[in-house]
Amino acid sequence: MRAVIVAFIALVILTGCQQRSGPQAPLGQDSFRRYQQETRDWVAARRAFQTLDKNQELAWNTPQEWRPAAARPEKGILLIHGLGDSPGSFSDIGPALARKGFLVRTLLLPGHGTRPGDLLYVSVDAWRRVVREQAAILARDAGKLYIGGFSTGGNLALEYAMTHPDVQGVALFSPAIKSSTRYDFLAPFAALFRDWLRPPGKVFPQQIATRYLRVPTNGFAQFYHTSAAVQRLLNEQTWNRPVVMVLAEHDSVLDTGWIVDNFDKRFTHPASRVIWYGSPRREVAGVSRVLVKPDFMPEARISQFSHMSVLFAPDNPYYGREGKEIICANGQEESEAQRCLKGETVWYSDWGYREEGKVHARLTWNPWFFWQEGVVSEVLNAG
Image (cartoon, rainbow, N blue to C red; front, side, top):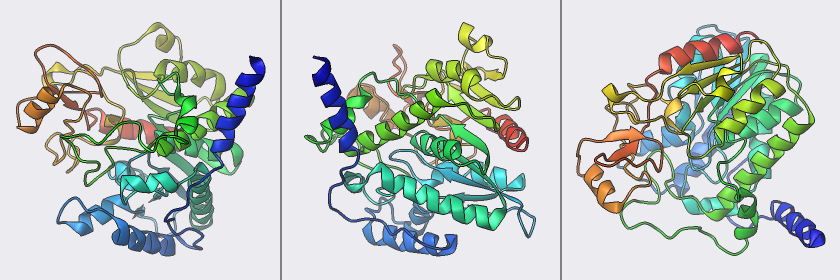
């Protein structure tokens, strides 16, 4: 039996090296400007546009840069988006960090920005390659190198930081170090047999202007490889540079309890902090470097924070309190989703939260964003 289990694990690991033939985003550029332009051209040619404002969609779904006031920046940070997401995830965080003196750049992970089916053709090695290339370019252009990421992008950022001693600090937003799903290790195996884990929905599209709403099995398989790699590194070593980690207690995607439990053990710099949106629990209260803010805010009809809500300011034009995008696809019954789509008054939560008498859309903004901005800057500037 043990031999069978070992063989199965070996098969899962080997599948991470396999890649189906398909269209590949251009890589290998020698400057950010060239990378930005070639990526924009690629996305423009392949994207399934969701609105008539193609320029705005391209701006959200392609690499961006925010420059500080200083003519010659002394520090730069590379920000990496999550699975199914886009560089626009940092449309509020990027300018905030630029105001604090950072040259800020985002990248586009291959398979993103165009159409969900393009994730059938990517591997984690392509994601690592673009991180490696753009980090090296930013280090050349800005001196001190910092790196950050959201969800899967947080894994890629942390893996890079822990294997490159020139990284001065890390900012992690809902980092997907450990999934809330016990069987995520099966995703690479499942990708051999099923392109999609669930059929297309009848109510919601596969993507919207800002992100994918549906991800093929191969996308989850490559996410698993990023998570497994970071867990291996954390089991082997500690990291003694400043880290700021932002977590929502009720995140449906992550095992946030496990992540915060391991924070004090693995991230040893005294300036490092966890921002925890939720109620103080024993394991949180016992960690000296955790800053807690409540995530139940009935005055704003917020039942709990979501995986993505940590990223956006309340005035974000897409995802803010009055933003264009209301994500009614939130793990509820179709009848409740239809009520949300028709414009009924909704509460806000993470995916899958249900409460009798209330319809919940996804919480897509962070009421504590501007306080969080100050904490992130303080931690990174300790590096």
